[in-house]
Image (cartoon, rainbow, N blue to C red):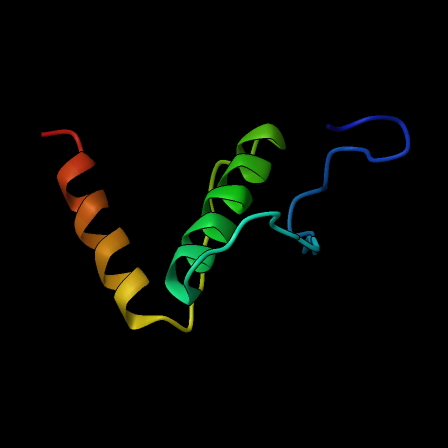
Length: 73
């Protein structure tokens, strides 16, 4: 994904992407898909620290609960 025309971002850079899905999804499903897309972009860019925001309390609550379960002992 990263190339000479699209170099790795520098520390502190903000990235913006336009995402278009070719399938039907509920509002919350679309928000999950965008979150997953953003996490993949961050992973590919080598991001070590990430803050994600959402206007969906349901998505935020479910992701937080999932991440609590994933934390190492």
